[in-house]
Image 1 (tube, rainbow, N blue to C red):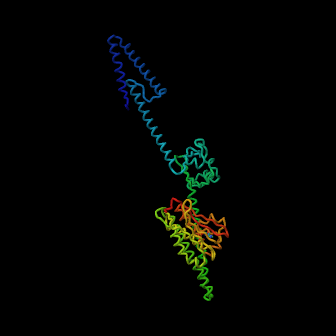
Image 2: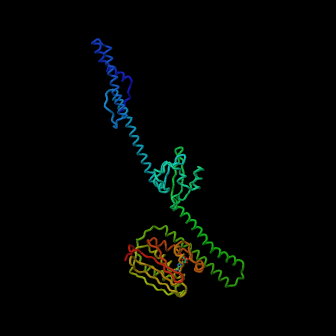
Image 3: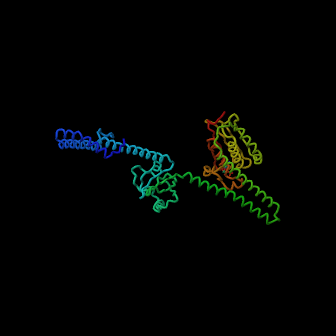
Length: 432
Ligand code: ADP
């Protein structure tokens, strides 16, 4: 297709065309006239092909060039080849652009391209969702008109993009967005936006958690170090005081130990795979064993126990976690029920599965505390708890253990009317 047209070849062709006219002219003794006719025909032919080329280039919709002869056929072919190459290049560019757009849609972040003056050039769909952009209507709008926070305005106008900025989503859905500007292609700016709501929440939780643990450990340590100082100073302490100090220190040490063990238990539960339904658990046995372990405290407080456990009822689950959940609920009931009180423990079939519950005749809980009881370190009444040595972690463990069985802790309680804690197991997890 590609043929470089040499001038010598063109001249040769023209001379070959004129040769018969020259010969005939010589024969009939009209050399110049015949040559002129030959030249005129050549010019007419060129004009004809030139006009065809003109039409083909401007009017025709087809890529194929018109048929031609001689040098013109090579010229048409040359132009056709150039057009073909341009078309192939255009197609591959369009494909590349399409791929780029698909890639930009596939990334989990929102992306926007801004011009040097901060006007919008392009966005992916996620960006349109995050910022409520109407596309393409909003093309050309300044980013500071889309995100109208004075803090963002200042940040953008300052033009120092070494650190990202975090803002609340301008469409008011409480999403926290981290914006990172990257200059590119000399004048344009690429803006990548990430939803960091969950990350910020986790970060806050981590900070709260560290603060809580520090606080919870500080209290017993202050008590212990106070007693130790007292013991160091006065050898002449009366024996009752001595006894009280040792007793108090033991109590606080036990509380710290319990807290550390419970924290370890929570983190173990968080780390474990959710391999839920591998074992058949006869919950009645698990609960009975827990009650037996707690027998001493039950006797000491002279509690009346009403236990009704269906031992024909088993479920698919994680025995250790279920044991932990039941043990914590039983311990709480015993801990918070005053001497001579009553505790009713049941495990029975219900309409769509089975239900475990621990009911007590304890002091009950005010409604405002109930939704927060499963938060780590949350305790309803601190006075009551300091006496019981509670850590506020028991129900957090129960919540975790139950989540593994796709169920929630149920709490029914009213001040002065006792409490009922329990959970329901879905029929799908019932083994028999
Ligand atoms: P704690 O170690 O303080 O008992 P939990 O997480 O087990 O921590 O319980 C959280 C809070 O819920 C307790 O501090 C207590 O105020 C309240 N609570 C739990 N169980 C009972 C109950 N059976 N009767 C009354 N209050 C309870």
